Amino acid sequence: MYRQFYPVLFALCRKFFDDKHEILTAINNGMLKVFKNIDQFDDQKGAFFNWLYTTVRNAALTQLRDQKTQQFDYDELDDKMGFESAENPFDKLTASDVIVYLSALPVATRRVCGLFYLDGFSIKEIGESLDISDGTVKWHLSEGRKKLKIIFEKIF
Image (tube, one colour):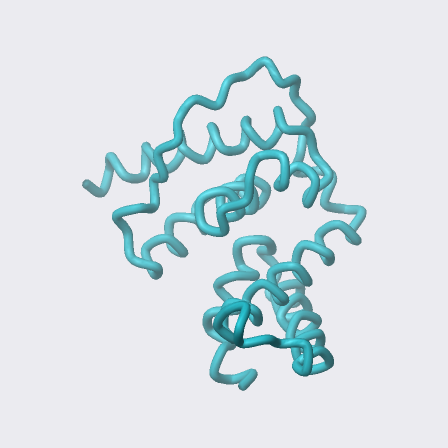
């Protein structure tokens, strides 16, 4: 099972970490939780893959929160900066394209954009998960959109 889901889980954890060791640690911690709690999976609540993916994603977020060195990526901003667009820049791309374009963003911005656009977290949920303000989340979303726009303009 580990080998079957490894490529998808690697791509998931790559959204949160640049260092391969940290990516593998997040995957392994998540899969350990999956194996320990496999009896808690209920197919009436959804597909196995969704449960596994969510478990590994939550393990990666826990790892992020536990790392005290992650604070350097975030400069707190006030909430006066508006986040106006509900448009998802990844809607018309394939999964492999999304991974390539996200990897071009700085780590902190990649985390926020991945959680918002790909995983469907709200701004408030992202702020709570990463322990940053809503204004900082909005700033990273805005920065991600600006940088992706430049990349997309060059390609398309």
